[in-house]
Amino acid sequence: MRKVHAELNRQGHRVARCTVHRLMKRAGLHGITRGKSPRTTVPGSVPDLRPDLVERSFAADAPNGLWVADITYIRTLAGWVSAAFVIDVFSRRVVGWQVSKSLRTDLALDALEMAVWNREHVGRRIDGLVHHSDRGVQYLAVRYTQRLAEAGAVASVGTTGDSYDNALAEAFHSLFKAELVRNRGPWRSLDEVEIAVAEYVDWFNHRRLHGEIGLVPPAEFEDDFYRNEAGSTQAEALVPSLQ
Image (cartoon, rainbow, N blue to C red):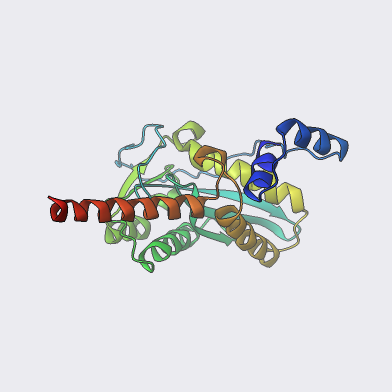
């Protein structure tokens, strides 16, 4: 109800929250309830010496300061499908994703490659970025850690099997399952899931209002940040000329 009220106000329709609540109740509309799902973490077979640089503090002062990555799954009539996501903590934007029939390393790596490309092709630097994940074998793989190093990112990991150590990614998966997977299933195939995930990510990034960032879409939140940053830079550049 809170987000419906916020969206109506964004569109210029001034209406009281109690009115929205009453009309939604009359129409039989209600918010989606999140559910719990088993974890998909498969621990690596070799020691992982990477530190936990986040320590359950999922906060960032700007885009590309902290990304979280994790994998979830979707049941289809043709078998299980896995989905990997990379999320920017500052804006909650999904910067990379991929779906596959297996939990292979390429699944996570392809999502990372998309995330790196999405930032770099618009001129956004990601060196110094902290990339946080669980200790799953996909994120421990040599190719994955090498790609992080090439991009200038620093790897951080939580405790295997402890959802609180990657809570922001787990929260996204909960929304993803509630708003898409359970809301529109049953699913027939990988291709059907892939198309639906692409549509969901576009909606999530550009139109869905997010309560943690002031009830605006993630893309809009980032645009506002860069616009304000540019304004501050211009103001600082004018100071010497005014002295």
